[in-house]
Amino acid sequence: MCAMQMYELIGKKRDKKRLSKEEIEYFVSGYTKGIVPDYQASALLMAIFLNGMDTEEIFNLTSSMMRSGEVLDLSSIPGVKVDKHSTGGVGDKVSLILAPLVAACGLTVPMISGRGLGHTGGTLDKLESIPGFETNLSLESFVKNLSDVGLCMIGQTKEIAPADRKLYALRDVTGTVNSIPLISASILSKKLAEGTDALVFDVKLGNGAFMQKRKEAILLAKSLIQIAGRFKKKAVALITDMNEPLGEAVGNSIEVIEAVQALKGKWPEDLRDVTLALGAHMLVLGRKAKSLKQAEKKLEERLESGEALDKFRQMVKRQGGNPKVVDDYRLLPWAKHKMTVESEQTGYVKSIDTLKIGLSAVKLGAGRERLDSKIDYGVGFLIKKKVGDRVKKGESLAIVFCNDLKKGRWAKREIEQAYQIGKKKTNRLKKILFLVDEKGARKLAGSSWP
Ligand code: URA
Image (cartoon, rainbow, N blue to C red):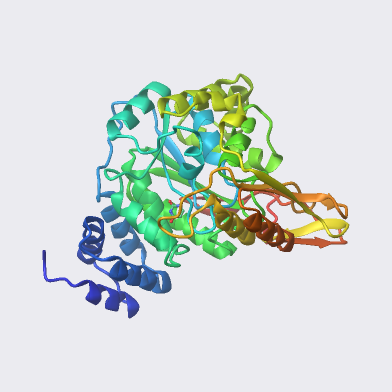
């Protein structure tokens, strides 16, 4: 190893200087191999968090993280491979619906997902609430499932983007999550390593997202598109609202149930809007539809015919899970206790502090507070009232599902405080706000953001 020293790299970033390609490679490969300790990696992450990185540095960070493991070549599987990735939200179970739905339309969806991060839920944790479901497959099985079923959902392995696996977990517990360079490199390193041809990003914006300001969300979307472009991948991003949880369910098994219900055609409007909009872009990028309108029609047909639900069943079975969960939700983990959060006044829901809801779910056991925390898969919330809904005093705002009564009572109070009820009628939140592609950012019709 050359005479580079981690403390010099940390000092450079602390002093707002650029890191070279070699320095970034030294950090990423050293940390992945366990040569660079957690305390030095944490210090560098915090310096990046505070002082940022330019496009060249983000590109080099992504490239080093992607090459920390294998980069899959899926050219043996015919057709276009398309994936989507969300920057993280509360109640965001879109991947569980979207991957089988898009696969049912004839595209291959190689999906490498993440675990819960900060206050946001993770697709892998949700999937693992299905008894027996395995997200840690060998690359051979991943490719075989893709070629046989058309989709496979796994996590970063020791082989695929191992640097992201370690850095993601470290960021989660060191206050270094919401940084544009770190999020861009984290998402893209695993997505590029999985061998996809095109990508659709769901960049969340609002009080439950890592990006709370419109400018930041657009910058993140542009960074993702720009870096994906440098790797010659077609990509678009939708910026979607996260000023309230998406759909009703927040947790793990409870979100799997909502996703399965959606695949059966029973879903809340906001979840439907976001899923179909992202799916339509995937079909257009994957050349399965000429226009977004045609793509939406195709998605709806595959839902109605039951083909999307069938793909979900096949995926669960292939990945070791019990496919009967689709027909019998009692086979999933359930919490022992249920408590209702009642409204203390009559009026309209003015706002919901979504970060508070996400953090309460984590503390209730649906996420991790420490690297080694165990997830309680059955706990979570059902959000019964959303922004713009009329509510009467004593009516239920949300339901808390818990295994520990003390924690449940605490979460109930947190949810009560997360709701702001006003006398004035408020509008429902539009979900699809901006489209970002290589031409720039455009506000979409009906977007409620200024
Ligand atoms: N999703 C990821 O994969 N990484 C991040 O850093 C944030 C969201």
